[in-house]
Length: 397
Image 1: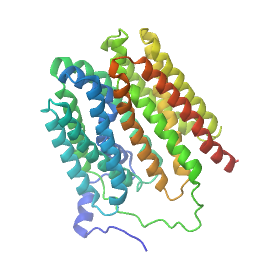
Image 2 (image 1 turned 180 degrees about the vertical axis):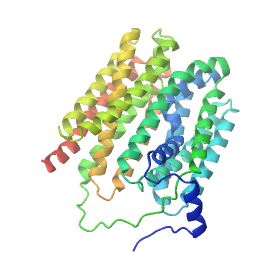
Image 3 (image 1 turned 45 degrees about the vertical axis):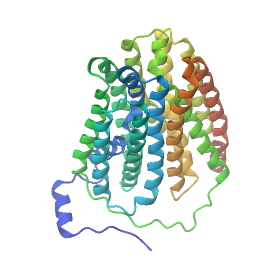
Image 4 (image 1 turned 30 degrees about the vertical axis):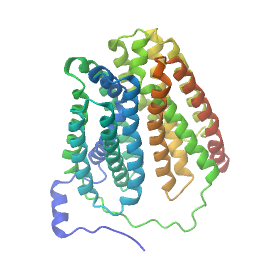
């Protein structure tokens, strides 16, 4: 039994006139903007947390919890989207969700109390998570799907780097509303692009006869490694501006370091494509995560601008490199693709849990304990990841 959305003659003619080619680079760019719009605040999380502290007078703990609520909401939304993407008219749903995101960001500009902000950003996250889930489902209908996700990384790291470089210095000048205006501008851009995307009708359900059974033990290990890795990284990333300032650095040093670090994430994703599995998975993943741990430990010496820069640049490359491999490993354990979605859910849960955990650890104002705990979690993630990596390497030997 198959499912397929059909278009009437008028719809078909309209899409011919206004839509870009379904498998074109421009279509992939537009889909990347659509997917990024729901989670762009993650890419500028340091700017958002710092802006709430500097511009609204929120405590570091409250600002971190607000960021965490945002991403937890996104995790829930992404999970719900798994069950809705085949039932909703995706363009109408995406447009409605983008308009809701814009409305929530407008209201966020008016709130001055942490608790209402936490609740509102949780709803914002839920909305964005639904949008990302829909966008990912549509991207899966493109030809050469890996190119669509490559474009997604390009947009996320490129514009995310620009955001963390330019936004923090603007908060003291214009106030924290500038952060939400940046999110609104991104959503408006995605809404405009949505009008030019083709229909991407739902494809027939893939047959799963003869598919190998899912190996749940190594799969669960891969999911745990993703959670640990993302939580450890985001715990520090959310507070990296405050960490640098506490060490005596200025925004003129911190913001460019974060921007260039985000852009170097593009190098990490390119390295994954180039290396592929020529050296297996276990060795590249283990080395990459251990480098992340070493660079994270180096943040103890952030009083040196050179060390702060080098540590962030190293994490920028290895973060993108490692998570691309780990998410790919989840997909390889399930030919039907459902476990890849579960890996994405684990990733969002890790991204949400990091700021929450950090907000509790740094309540006393010290970042040393947070750095040490993040290093331990990263090393644990590297060890846990060896099991699924070796399982796949041995199976393909």
